[in-house]
Length: 77
Image (cartoon, rainbow, N blue to C red; front, top):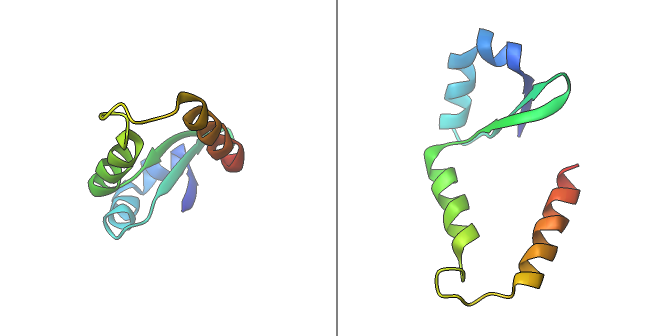
């Protein structure tokens, strides 16, 4: 994962777009805080598919999913 400022993205967008096409994930920061992620189209589809696994079949435990999401967000910080 590459972390860059919003200004850096603005000034060198082509460079970072190529990085995303190569499989990198770009974390965009503004004033030191995460404001966006730039990921490839295929990564976005994979993320959404993984997020919906079990939900469409109504085969999920809401408490378990909530705990997993909290754990994921805590590991990011």
